[in-house]
Length: 309
Ligand SMILES: [Fe+2]
Image (cartoon, rainbow, N blue to C red; front, side):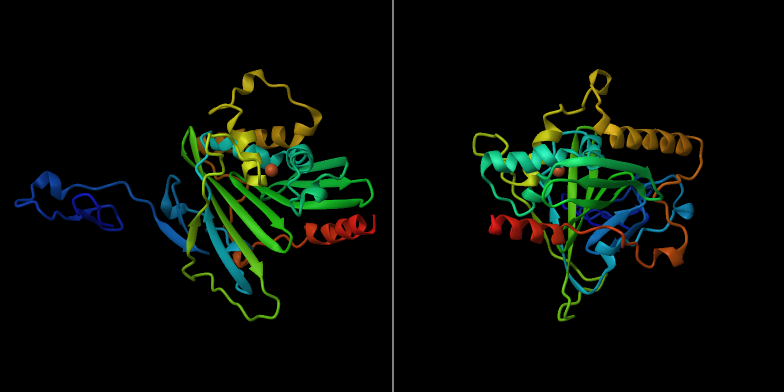
């Protein structure tokens, strides 16, 4: 990697190996080394292992969204969020926010997002459970189109996995620092007739999603992304959890925080984390979630009912 400022060149271990424009390289410069991390490319993203000992690194999980080849993949970089990453991740353990923040707000603003009616159904109950990837989530909807929705798990520590109709999506919430977070989005759209194939090592072009705000700096609230960004950032840059009122529907958030605390303690004690750590190559051919119920069928049903009415 060559520095774009003065052209100094570094090898993969972080050792500086070229000093252009330096007439005489000093001993001190020859020893110049940056901290480096082993990298792997998968599904259009680069993953760095930043743990304590690269020799003992677990496998890079091969999520279906990254390695499926029977369709097309796209990568998007969302506008940076000016808040701590944990606020964004807690949103994924917060199953009920989809009712008001997305379902009701869509109706109030007259947006007609294709999935809003799906989320606007009355929630009768919900379940959370610890699983090997993080948290399992199930929601029972009542009303005209009742359904038990098994959502993909919240993947520990920082991933959202969600179907958008037929499109399978993952968001990585990557901390830039304590106060800023970058969201990397990968979507995989299956193409059933096999006419499009995207190898896992394909170079995927990426796109920056424009800032989702009005010219005067207000949240535009026109998409689920913007609605979520508003809810996540307006908690404050680092949300003060010492002064919050948790409800029964925050059970998933409490379970997630407990999991995070336990895993931090394990790592501090020099132990391996136990959640979403893959070490068995046989298990890592492809990690998918065949039990999830996709919203696509329910959305069709809801549309048919709306038409009939
Ligand atoms: Fe949301």
